[in-house]
Length: 386
Image 1 (cartoon, rainbow, N blue to C red):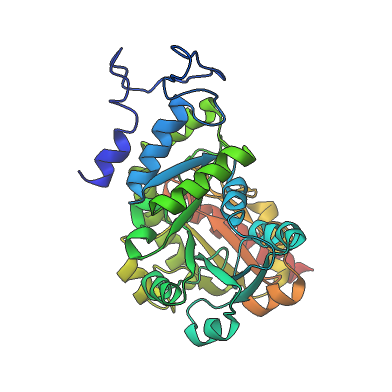
Image 2: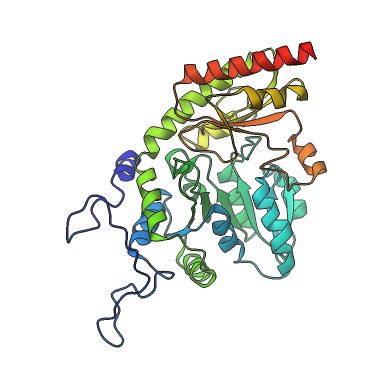
């Protein structure tokens, strides 16, 4: 069955008693036991909930994994995965990284003796130099947030396996509709499901999908023990959002590509970071390992003085954090999503005071271009008159 059909049919056949095509929300926190020593399979909702189970099974199938785990946020999902590691363990991590992930690694995991080194994950030699007997895993974002760097998942996963390392891939920006890292050799996939999977800026959620029985059992133990689980109502909202994922991702991709091409030619824009553009250094790898592109990209203006008036003058596009919803959002990574990353690291990868990140929604692309055009024009006038 094609992925479009599997998405649309999430939860539609799992309720045989009533035949409900929208799976019910089970708000119960406790479930009756038939008798001593017997269970319906559901005992306490933190451990297992019928609504969440349908979502988790769908996530595992979509990502070609063996088990899925729905969490209370994307960061909760990452925290569960990072709890696989113990004092003295070391991770190799993508250099360009979401600020929240960096904060979790450097402010929380270091308290427990887990350390990380940051590197361009396409540089096998650099990773080999960083790899020690204590290195346990490699954590990849691809595309990265916000500079859209692309990692060859198959190549890196093969290298990691040769070293006995786990490969963890954050697949938030492409979703299983466009990219399935486990099929390329990854062991674990994580999502901030708040973003494209939910798709409507109305549910906070995270997903983990794992490959392999032993690894899945370890993550299942941590998921239950930590209690970073998704509630029944939010599980239902996430399933509802995922039903339209295929349609939305196609529109996100179309709009983002058109707008990136427009900005590439604009006199006020210095650089556009979007892997759908043939000029992008990761274009060939992205084309090989993914069937499409995300709806988010970043761009640099030629003068940092453009930033404030652009954000003040956009009208249809909202100046707001987050990404992946049907509404278009623009944010300023240096002081918002990546503020927790030290200045020297941000500057090294290019997250500077001229960079804006644009999460392109599903509005009509002509309206979005018109909004950008008027905001850029207004910013230019203000700078020239200053």
